[in-house]
Length: 290
Image 1 (tube, one colour):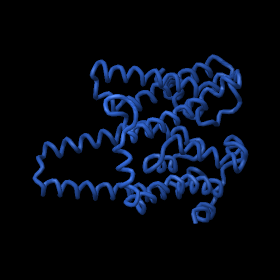
Image 2 (cartoon, one colour):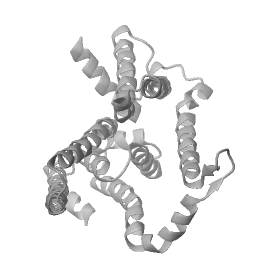
Image 3 (cartoon, helix red, strand yellow):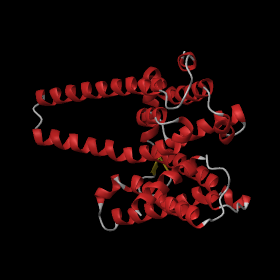
Image 4 (tube, rainbow, N blue to C red):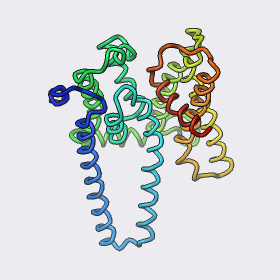
């Protein structure tokens, strides 16, 4: 149906139909959020909860909603060149993550054309866009569907597992925390390996190292934030550390990209990668500052 809807007219990533679909999704989400917020406020008043506590909860919730939006905005920037503005905004603001979205998009492009660069060079058709959108959406929705229908079946077993400990000192290490840490570290190592791949390839172009530079800068920023949070007791920084690290890393890459273009450093002919898209956005911002 999505293919027929988009294919009935000349397709463009900036087609009004795409933004209309985005508007429908956005309106539904806003309406649902307002419904639950008003219901919660009504219930809180029935329970006699103080207004000061209600305001504190609203402020905290707003903070934890807005701050991750900085990271989401960066993710949208990296996908704009491939999927336009509307679809990445839907995917990253509703359910999804930058790492997952870029992997799925690249996987579809490689399956259809051999590479993302080849797809962009050929021109993304309505069928290509629909294929990419469906694969990205159906896969990520599987988790929500599974929880909706099967969570009550396996939740008791997970609860027992999460309560267990193993090894370590002072009562051992919680298995649930251990599983999360192992999974997270494995994911980080995987993406770190993708970033340092350029070292093994002995790339001679400056833009080939954008990902690696961004990783190093972000790691350094996160370390500084961690020190400030734990040593200087800047607890408020805990909510800002990830988006701040991403912004600084992107800004540094943007500065390097700006200098590379200004001073004629060696650049590859491929400027359609996600890293270059992000670098271009940061480079333009840096140029405006100058």
